Image (cartoon, rainbow, N blue to C red; front, side, top):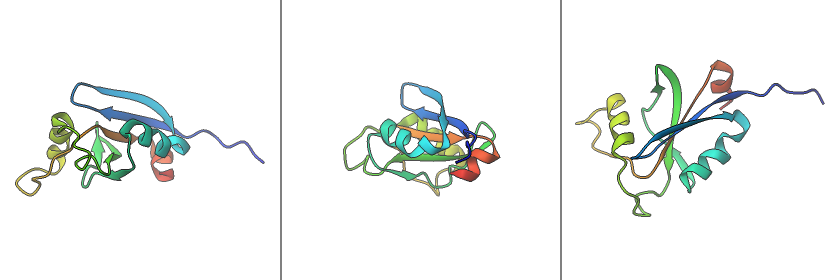
Length: 108
């Protein structure tokens, strides 16, 4: 079996208190996002850009049902891309953003 090149991008976790980032291999994105969110996850609609780069953003699938607090920082970031009044929704709990070069993004 040939050695496959590691495809590495960045995973950012947005909480009310901080934005932290770490390198992540494409094969580990689902596991690391699940770990950071503490839940199964779903995509954030219309959140497609971070720092001028194409991205995917995820939140916990049942954050509102679990009573997680509103994440003002993540909500504000989302509303820049999909603003009110069309979007009256908000994000609770942490939000994960993943981005990288074309090879990384195409493997997601």
